Length: 381
Ligand SMILES: Cc1cc2nc3c(=O)[nH]c(=O)nc-3n(C[C@H](O)[C@H](O)[C@H](O)COP(=O)(O)O)c2cc1C
Image (cartoon, rainbow, N blue to C red; front, side, top):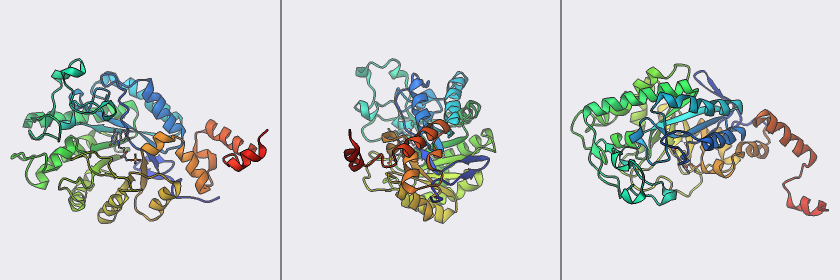
């Protein structure tokens, strides 16, 4: 039995994660006009039960028009707080810390989800209210294959910052303990950062400082509304394939550190083409490592982290402080329980919540070689 890094605690402000495994935000496309349903309770609940230390709710929009697609979740109304409080209570009761990602899709809004064919929503889709869905961006520059968005006015930008602040306040009231600002994947914040989508000539465009202004205002506003005891994360496309490079991210992160961001959630892409193109194990880990080394900020790595030993190695080598998993946890929400077994971590089945851990421990005692097909053939009756 060993003590692994993967199952060691991490403290961020006053929040203690029981291990370094994070369920990465994953849209479910199952919201009803932004409201969560029993699906979200089930999905996030099973991720918590599976042993992840921190379970993120999918990208949840700060305003109705900020949705990417019809099934996205939103947190734009106080009435939604009790609905989300059910989710945070369930996640917490199953041993994980509940986290929320806040977002606005900007020019990538009003689309069909990829699993429903993708593309911009039109009258042909028969979706009520689609024509009132205002698609906005820093500039009237379209994302490939999508319609030209409406450029935001200055006063609209200020109102949007207020919407982020109000959403953070609601997230706190609903019981989330960690907040991740979605500044990646070609969505609104990223659209401001990138010269490919931001051609404004006012003080929200032009120089890197100006293009970062929207993000800085959101961080300052959210940090003032989000309790000092709770950590604030920022997801960035550290490289985006459209001109934004690691050096740009390093400069940006160095400016943001004093504003109270606690960890950079390092992703990539989304400005041109899909964000999920890569097919190499740990294809984004070097980004988390580069940001961590250059800025001394805590980072997380995400992207095809599949094997328990792979995750352990990332942490052992100081390449990141947390590992985020998405599709692997979708495949097996009990990945953390399995990882503890594979690594021989001393916590064993106690990485799961109490009752699940108890019964899995009993199962292992009764049939120690349970997973071996040789054993099955030898003992079949
Ligand atoms: C179904 C699905 C939904 C996703 N939704 C989000 C999301 O809401 N916010 C986000 O930042 N990334 C989202 N992602 C990206 C993941 O969080 C993750 O960064 C990416 O899938 C790479 O990790 P993986 O290789 O472990 O899947 C989504 C990915 C998938 C597969």
